Length: 268
Image (cartoon, rainbow, N blue to C red; front, top):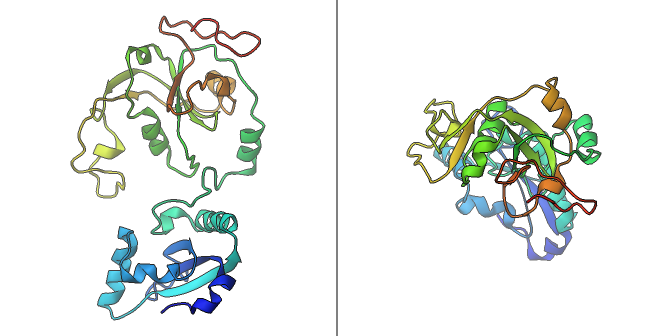
């Protein structure tokens, strides 16, 4: 099937969904956005392994997926927002989509988290902290996945060994606070990537050790004094190199950074 070329301009950008006719949930297994005949492209062979697996199953049954155009006549920016909203509402874990959408840096957040995120107060760090930036931020991930994504695996020097705490940071805001007990070579501690549990979606059978490091520690709860001091606060002044995922609150001697009135570090 193809859309007649004379309606392409009317369709503009649209959101489409694939449904499995053998699934009684009435929910799609894939949501996408496109123009012209993009909605039918997966039928010729999908780049998405999970989508292709479902299509192959239906083909073996002599069936085809149901395709629906959820909304059309959108600009590109509107389509990106609509796609992200649809995936966030349905839940990525319930879909075959590889990513959460083009505007998915911060979705499925509670009103409290939205307020805290955009009204975050700036804080001066009094402890030796390594700040690890994780973008995009998905608050729906299980805690062990937040932990593993924060602690592993980074190309770092000896400066890391002085860290007392590690912060999971998104857009300059502290989302999680962990203690740092010790650092180990990448892949040498129990991790979602080397856990062969058949229900573990993050397992990599032939995961090889790289010249990187991971720490072990524990998540501090919200009532901990350190969490109260830093959780939900802005630490943007400490992010000195925008392209780096790891930043420190202290210099190589272990002295916590101090700033002048212009925000410049006085003891680099």
